Length: 222
Image (cartoon, rainbow, N blue to C red; front, side, top):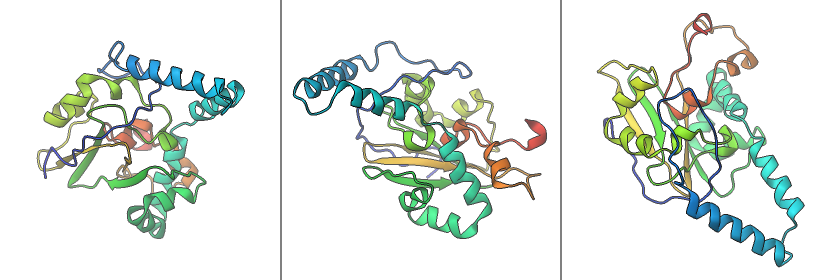
């Protein structure tokens, strides 16, 4: 399917506030206020009942907030350099990322690959479902109503606003995340990177390339 694909309509309520200033989409005011209130009430009830302590909640949130896109960039760089790992990743992404100590037991992870003919981009049309264990906090624009609605109906126009202009013969596939399923885009490896180490390659991979709104640029272009 071209330009529209993989649309599901389940979502989770796991919302944090990432901030981003480099993109045209802004977060919607109070878009998650209901779930923020619900989450706060649940946290207070669990603490009151002695199920968890406030310190345990704080520590868990700090660990969660400390995750960065560096986890995802490790996976991408390994897929670029190790054909056997790449095969394992597309066969069972959960098991493949677990090789880096990234455990996603409640989420079915799907890796999708950008090629000369296909460009993948990820959205959550109803919420902000997102592979946080790999990419950290979702950016504000990812949660905005404008992005969530427009990228489905006019993905090429949205990509162009991120500076990503694709040839007409490249198929755009839009993947809609759900409560139990997350997507990781494996971007195309840029030219001029032959002989670079995994560590060097990781530095080329950004969060937005793993969402699919941008592409990885050659070293000389960075």
